[in-house]
Length: 183
Image (cartoon, rainbow, N blue to C red; front, top):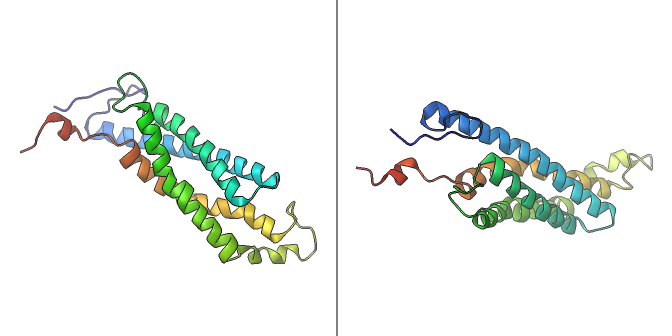
């Protein structure tokens, strides 16, 4: 007897089958948005590094731009929050998106980058590739490490970002809660 509504795909969102279909759509949509924003983030990061910027500045620039892009795509397409009947204002979802990505995309990413590049010095793993002077387009093992480290960090962050967005930033109120007190 729960309220049913049709999503943008025409499928009924209510009920067990509709709920599974909706969750699958959200997971696939989130993965698509995540892939796009991962490429965007990494592209901005690489551009800043190529221009001589510090890896932390590159990381922050990529984060700011890709999180804004993620919010636009998730708000209007993945979690379908946009529109006149949206359960929360756009600015609230934007703030929650930056806060949820703030942990994984800003704090965790930059802590892991510092650990990998300045404490563990992962560039030693790449030094054997540079024995014959110029290997790859990278000038040094350190330069190669600065390009590879964020890719490793992104693999760690993706599932954490999905869970934070699904269950916090774009959380739907339980239908039982909206129907009134339960007995």
